[in-house]
Amino acid sequence: MNHDTYDNAYIAGILNSVKSIAIIGASANDVRPSFFVTKYLIDKGYRVYPVNPGQTGKEIAGAMTYASLADLPGPVDMVDIFRASNAVPGIVEEILAMDPLPKVVWMQLTVRDDASAVRLEEKGIKVVMNRCPKIEYGRLSGEIGWNGVNSRVISSKKPVMRQGFQSFGIRQR
Image (cartoon, rainbow, N blue to C red; front, side):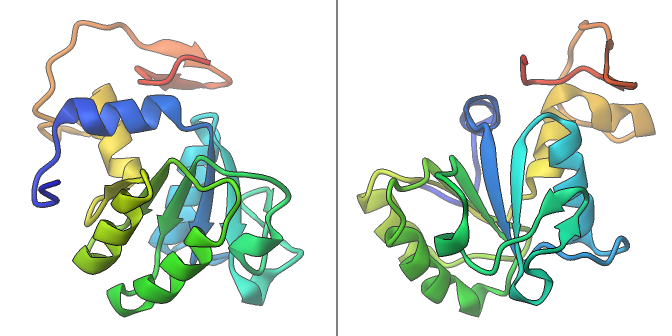
């Protein structure tokens, strides 16, 4: 697969099918991007499991934090990697040891490892690199346009009130 560009349908398909996400490198610091992403995905209805050994047993954005993927209480659909690219091969080893395997491995902005992507795809795992699920969700749902950003997506959908926040939402609960 060409990981330089992704079709909107590929990204939307992932965001629509995934229900549970482990975020490796989630931060308890509420000014860090990994905290924003964790909170945003929880607010959008995903079941999120922060993974951060330094925060084990504590909550990040209201979700219990785990030391490693092996410590998660159950399977996850997606693993979101919020670590430097040179950490990806080791994380992929942990991912490939999971049973069952996740459907998707998502690497955050600036995170890319083509050799790891090939290994994951050989096991039937979808891979997204150098993208942020929060940004992609906002772009595809049109929410990012509320702030004047061109999402390159045109929609006539009306906002729907969901638990106190407006959302064009690409997910249906």
